Image 1 (cartoon, rainbow, N blue to C red):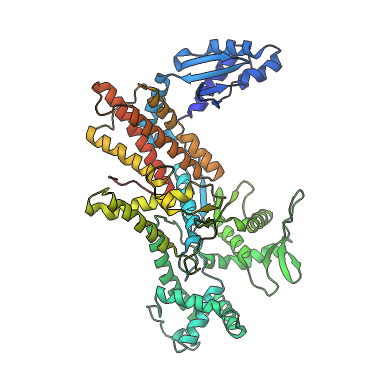
Image 2 (cartoon, rainbow, N blue to C red):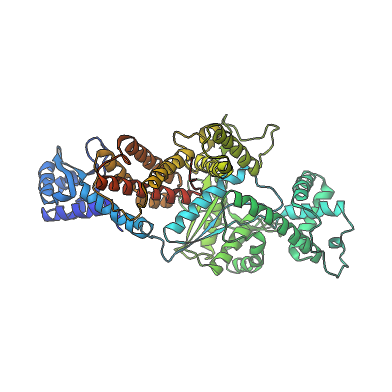
Length: 582
């Protein structure tokens, strides 16, 4: 269904035309003076210059042509503004259409389009840490938003599974257990089905090996193991499969705990087979040129305000780098899915890298000219003191520990305040903790750094996830006491608080589209905070269940029911859900 602002604008344009003026002057906007009106049109001011007459004269002529049944107020004021307040009947009809249409009538602007969202950025054999929180939850929210707006959205974790870390692990394992068959080049039998290590072992092996990179002899072994793995050495490939199976199972468990789910679990290794042909093609076509022994793609463009260095395709020693893999991954994605857009969610410090990769991909014709490529660079999550988040001993906090800390903090509040029965404590705590964690992050603009404040994020009042959940649970309680309510129609607003809530609900579609255009889930957070505020104001100022007029009561119930459904849809997009009681 059409957005309410588009409907009002269309009616205003028709009024301008009927009054004898160009309809393009009839654009309506949300009022910047909500104390005076709800919507406004300033077109008469611009039209006055073209038609050589006073703006107020035009505004009055246009106002005469508007259908007064659509407005509680429609007045022309000096020097030529048109101030509007919608009628209750107009709003009720619009919300009733929202209530009865699938997905609230939100336009499926992505129908028939495919987007790949590259997020997560997990590395095999390493535990997820707090640095993985933002790409996981921002990427998941954006993917769910694209899906809701009609796109075929494919989330790909794009695992780091093919670089030096694999060679480091293999070299360390060989030093510890040289008798394993994986290191015997003459071994021709079947390798063991069980890995010779656990995920806990891996989490100790990798940092130990990484610390030995400064040792020239060990570093040489690790680089050689990486090369032989990538060239297909049988024993190393078998070890790599063990590493993958053990590590990915653990990663999936941790992402599941965060309610983050990927459609594809592909990695750098999946793109590797595409590299030779891609590099050869770029060399043959002159896209890649030699520079100091390396092969590079010049990507600087006329008009660049900052230097954009060439994109390195192959280093002087013949090895590929991240840019090579990212370009090959694009080749693979175009062949497999032919997406209309590819969206990358990573640290904003990678902005230049993706600018180089995007330009190189376009220059080489890897993507079609109309294919969108976007990098959402996010800021840093800092501690309460504004400094980079660290553990007490100065290390990097594991993501599962952060979730556990938030859960423990919330559980203590749930138990202390006796929010739910004892048998519901764990399930309720988990939902509140996830809302606190995700909303605390997503309510910030992705590109900005923010301070992680557990106490503030878990508060039941203010702009927090638990406050949004509390609003939903409060409405659920009212609805359950009323009884069957789902088929009740929306009625004209009975008081100003009802009307304010109705106007807030109409902003759903425009908000979701704005969040998608700017890749900003924080706009959805701001919207549901406003909507929850309107719900609570309406609740406090209106007798709902105690209203004696049954028709009036049914209208109240239908309205808050619709608001609840909208809130629940929005928090689903953001990646969390509400408990039954709170």
